[in-house]
Length: 338
Ligand code: SF4
Ligand code: SF4
Image (cartoon, rainbow, N blue to C red):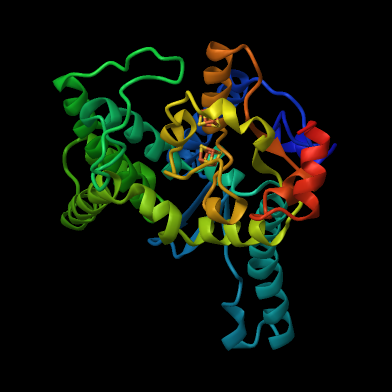
């Protein structure tokens, strides 16, 4: 089974292939909802958590200890201790980092765009914020066109502002409680909450974490994804290093088709990037394909033609790394018939 099959990314595996924007977004929604549920439920289902009370990790229902207790009493030798650290700590960490690195090398920040529970919050609040204040976020003063890619007006009204505030605080609270269940027995945390009897420290943790996360979700959600998240920046660096990696490509031979467009692709981007730019300027791209879907819609309405943006790999991807021409761009133009 190829990497493309594993990731179920319909457009990858060839240098250029048509895809259905709606279908891609449907798959992406399903994967994000499933991973968000896993993020919230993993501690309660004993899939993964650190039990600070018991002093060990719990992984897939089993206690996960380094097993070094016998070292001081001489029950295990130093060589056995080193082997246990390697097998029980370094190997699992290396496997996770290796898998993430491989996916980033080939496909970019697919973890961010297709799974990450923080990015799901970013996208949800972006959509609400745009309807509420006609802007993509607090720090961007310019209003966006208040319409969808197909030209239909976006709904708006005071209730969207209320919904945005509820979503910001609600997500922050859910995240705070979830993070606490990664550290303390989930049954105790949820049980105390339901009975409205959290301990002083539990209430303090949940209160402070909710306030901090609400501030981040409201005012710095893109900034965190672009510059603050080590996982995201790691994926970006790995992706940038591979000139053949999957990237959103722009059909420059048909660039005139953009003349009548209201930059639907830029307005659709949750990371506030310019999807038509060369690769290094889309360093934080999460492969969410919202720009592709937006252009697909614009072109379908305007001319019935295909999107100017699509996922590309190999030679066409190399052309996206070349800002002022170069052999890859010339080859790309020839292939597109430009
Ligand atoms: S450039 Fe396109 S694929 Fe990348 S984050 Fe923005 S909308 Fe998503
Ligand atoms: S690439 Fe597509 S969506 Fe973006 S400005 Fe051009 S026509 Fe519009």
